[in-house]
Image (cartoon, rainbow, N blue to C red; front, side, top):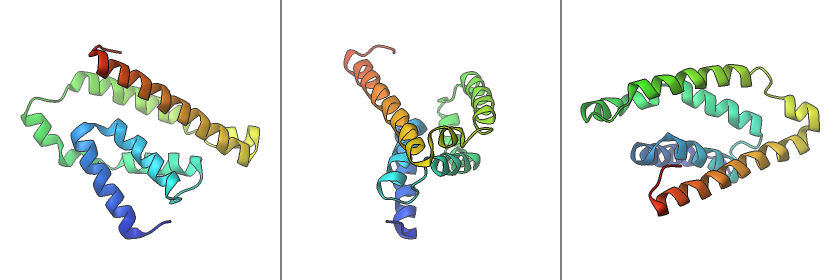
Length: 136
């Protein structure tokens, strides 16, 4: 159930989490919270909302601390940003393709299933690398 205060508290929790562990986990948490608490029900609208959230340079408030500690790899970050811009540009041209192909109801299930499968696979790989202390 949507409430403004609850949504702000969710953002506070995820922002704190991201500053400790990284934005990938924060993105996964937000997608889960938005669906679980029925704040946004459409997978396509969640994708658009997540892009809107990412378009605001939120990291800039914590960036000086990481910079002062020497904890930023600008080269790798720049390569990822280039890939993200290209991928988002290509992916955003067909946001409703799956819904049009499978119908709205089945399309939502397909998109959620793909996302859940990717998260499950990443969870297993992350746990494996953590337990065995090895790179993926």
